[in-house]
Length: 151
Image (cartoon, rainbow, N blue to C red; front, side):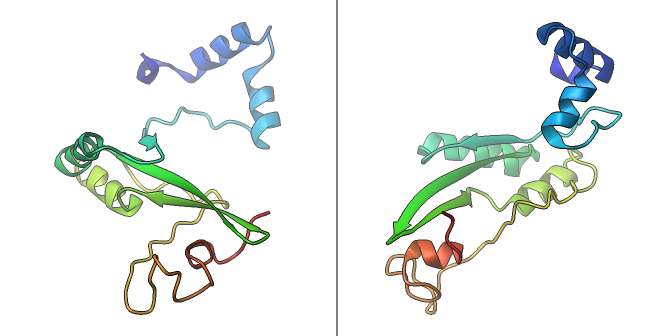
């Protein structure tokens, strides 16, 4: 099982699968830093989908809310507004809620360090922001969600 693997065993498996290339060297080339001494034992389950059916939504909520399992779903959407293109990410459950419930259930110990790349913004709908018409900040729902275009 994966959870029973040691760092040494992972390095050995990598070396066998990659013609003797050292795991540490390949890791550093890929990620720009040496691997940590231990393996990450905190797992998160993330379902990536265009949308979820009602059954999958119930299962995710049941596991996350009822048992503190760190499970969530993320949706990616692509928008075009004239020459600007946007890629948005939306979480099914606020990640901080999943983390808090997981910690209370004994699943996670402490927070992961920020990776310096990903940001999370949770924005609701009210009189100043209407996602159907794009009212509020920006000229379209995509602009309102993203703020800056990605090209």
